[in-house]
Length: 237
Image (cartoon, rainbow, N blue to C red; front, side):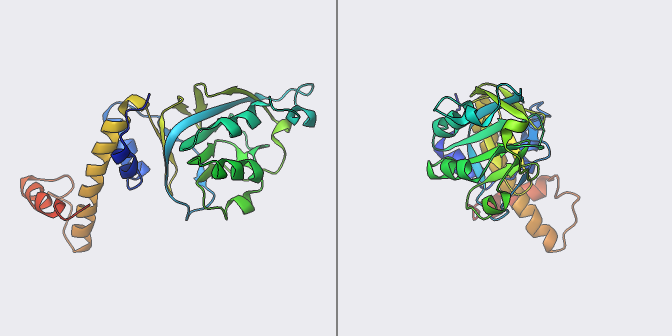
């Protein structure tokens, strides 16, 4: 279960994935950034939510026909309907974008149900329409063919790998303009709090650098800079 407080959930919307990966690296985690995914809509809001997962394995011709979508038992369709509001759906597509992980209709359904976003290490079809949605969507590249050509949907809400990052149900998934970071659930609260304070300090540093100050003694901070930052921090929120 996540320990993320509502306050830190809001704070994560102001924290970059770059800062989060550094906070995780300090704790020994090197592989929490999902590789080779990018946002379809660069102006969409930042993404923060618990992971709800779907895993694909390679398709098999006698199982993955269009008739597989009939009824209510197909794992991909069930995942779309079962992903809880506020969660991020994360799909393990084996980094294979030769067929779509999902398309515009299913992603619209996630948005309308109040989910926080969707990520695949494969591709999405209907990407021009998805790119116009006010919804955080991340993939490797556009992919028109139906998922059935390459993917067999199997496990729902089990541990997966997505873009070489381990993702466990309930982990906190954060997306920004650079990509997506996964925070292990048991570390979410402390990482969020630390990263928020680091963001404050880096805003202070950026202001000083724009004003002409050099980086030595500033980044990282010496004693004089820490005193100056403490005074500056009182006006930052």
